[in-house]
Image (tube, rainbow, N blue to C red; front, top):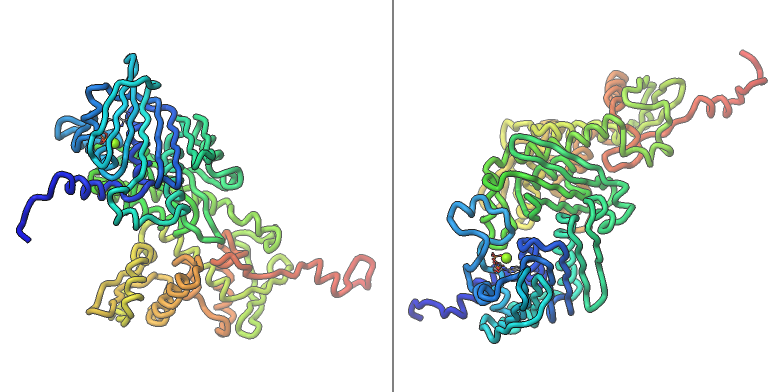
Length: 534
Ligand code: ADP
Ligand code: MG
């Protein structure tokens, strides 16, 4: 075929494909327009998870009658004018692409009336063609109804997932905006059923309405300010289930950002829930990277990383100092007398696996592997919290020959592996060369730890386990059951372990020791008041 320029219709469909992937993308674009128009109350109605209908109603500024046809033209926007406006844009939209893209692949009816106008305008556009435009009575604001999404692009339609999946994407978009804008009222209805009715209120009110009391009670807040801007938000650590839900916002826009994500992973160990807001001068953020404006870049990526990381780790360090996060287990495993810095006296080893020790007259039986794992886990997290990956350079790189699936697995975990202290690169087609390992891994164990780590990563994925990389590493690097220790070695291990604020649990939150109290000993022996003296 000869080279030719595509028809405007095809051009439009291709451009639409970049912005509108699924019903949730329509919801996102329409909500953004409503917010840009200064709306205070935004309602979203969907039918059939948005396949049949998506309707977004707002009480914003509305569109003047003469502007309505323009709103459906590509590159028609009221939000920027001169090139330098792009650099300081504060609105969600500015490309003038959303309405034409949506209209190209659906049947749209727009009803709008600006403040002060007596009559409103109703416009119908089908597959990108303006069918009708009439004067019409209308409330102040704008309502956009989008029907039969992808009716003229069957390929797209085929790629839609089940109603449940599409609806969950829509709910994700909706709750993200509702989280970022608690000062506005929001509602979401699905097939006439209300899913969310959110009254305007504070950030805390909104979190309570969206996530419920249980989550709320466990949320911790953080806050920090630096040269690059301000960061604040809430997080919840997840010590058991290991699910991750991180939502990042820059100037209240939900975004992806490699630096922010890396900071969150390094601080929280890759699990838990996080809502992180960055407020920063729009001039130092580039939101123009991605067609759907999802990905951002910062002029000072490192500065933003540091800001987020230090705000999060300050709170974590404070908790650690308080010994928080152990409360629920404390009653079971930790007698009140044992605390950070407890002086344990080594007595000996049982079966080269358990240590016997005494402290304040009580007898302790301690799992040596679990205790060592706790020490290494603390060391690793502390070093990560300081931001310096604790690396141990290898004299000769460790070369691992891997299947392509395994190479992919390593790539998938690259950020976290690097945050833990690994450095590796591709070494020929089917191998990687590992150049540094985390400091907690002894050099002579480099090979076996790397191999076993691969195995654990595979199992983790295959068995849907949720072990984090720092947990795996601490476990792999820790001494095993069956290791003989001299008395001074036992004493050293006890000294290090005794300093941990969470010595009752290993990295996986399993118990490390049990105690036989002095009173128990007395009772068992029968040395009670009134018994035989001396
Ligand atoms: P953009 O948001 O990038 O400007 P859109 O295609 O989303 O482009 O919208 C085009 C124009 O239509 C906007 O610039 C705005 O002037 C107007 N518009 C769209 N939706 C609304 C709305 N809900 N309220 C008021 N004006 C709107
Ligand atoms: Mg827009």
